[in-house]
Length: 200
Image 1 (cartoon, rainbow, N blue to C red):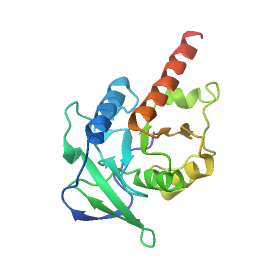
Image 2 (image 1 turned 90 degrees about the vertical axis):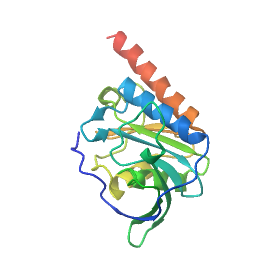
Image 3 (image 1 turned 180 degrees about the vertical axis):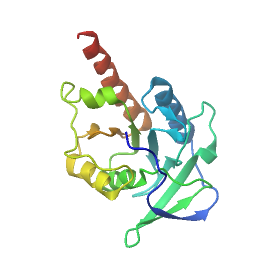
């Protein structure tokens, strides 16, 4: 797995706080659960994973860069991405924290998939290894984390029916109309993985 080096883009903080609703504590519960299950493993600088919910056409609340999920919600662990200046690849954000390094990925998926309102991204090497056996679609090539190229590889793969896929040699992405739906599709494939491993 590529060593984490922080965000690879510019961002412009327009406010140090942001409004949020009941979805933020729900997102936090799933972020913490994924870390406990090893689906977003914790490391020295944070956790291998990032999660978001949509707030507008291409705006979303997302886990901060290098977040270590906590059982009790800390709003400062999250950031509101309100837009992207595509000419300079600079995100506009609200909140005290830097947005997740995978903000490009979340941004382009929300733009392409208007029915998707939540994205959960984690890392599980066994899901990567057994993706074909589990009939999970995989992007064609590996790309470094946090890059437009990684985001584009996801765009090249997904359509309106895609709910779960693997970024090659990287991690999984779950999509849902709700946070719960994205979480449940992840747990479905995790359960299928466990069943597959038990048969071997």
